[in-house]
Image (tube, rainbow over all chains, first blue to last red; front, top):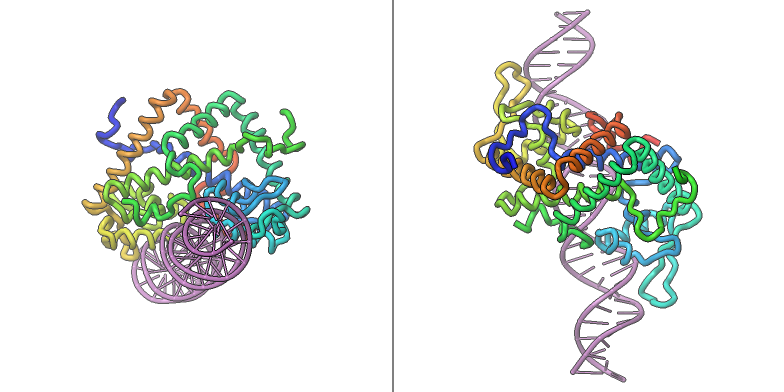
Length: 169
Length: 169
DNA sequence: TGATAAAGTAAGGCTGCCTGTCGATTATTG
DNA sequence: CAATAATCGACAGGCAGCCTTACTTTATCA
């Protein structure tokens, strides 16, 4: 415990805050995913679509559930889903058990796109394992997961305040 | 090397892609920083302001340089800087050596705000070290830094295409 | 000295996400 | 069973953050 609240000293040449490291890695990974999708010919994929790929199981799901799982609002998820339906990646069929709801499902094209993304995720995973070894990678995963638990009990699952910046003081 | 491009199997219950872990950790850290600022009374701080805090040294700098270092355009940096000047955190004085340029500097108030943020960064750093030990934390840092090098040679420094999503296919 | 580059700015666009609200339907409960 | 509440998806409107294009003013360089 050198000095947690004393002289901050972040102007010392090569100090890089942990948050900056994580942030830049996240940015690079996201750009890499997007670039891979675009280079695979799916040039209409955007950041927002990831919320679907990350939460839509092969058998389909309701938009409201997907929204809850990905931490965005129903409205936002609805918009993204409609957009992807327009692009021919998703289809929405009425839920026979609940006439308010619609079941969102991949089309064949959508499955292809998703598959491409998942494959790339596994390739990256493989690349990292080859680079660092399973142990260091596991350590990193554990640290990151714990960071989330340590600092984000309030943002774990909920749609994220978003008004974090205006109000909430 | 089990099967990098075979069955993706990401629908197996608890598989979480590395990218998702990094992304969520980054989000949590960012929200934490923002929340800390807001709770400290600086309720007008937003995500964008971080580009300034991260690149403006105590002695001041030009907006163009800060833009280059933080990877956003001059225009965006200009906007952020003007905004923070309006909030009384920065001041812009003409550069005596170049009449095109203005030197951006913290006001006393701005220094206080920045100091609060830096202190919190160090506190978090301290918290993580206590939680994981210096070794695991160092490993994580090394992995994240390397991820950036491995996957992001093109986005390292440049203003980031941003049209990554539309064009670039 | 004239062409080229650089600093800052203005104007306008786009993405991703939010809030508020609404109609339709389904649950709940007095 | 009827009234009320909750839920699903959609429409409307807004805002943050960032980008591109297009200047103006000043520096630099051939």
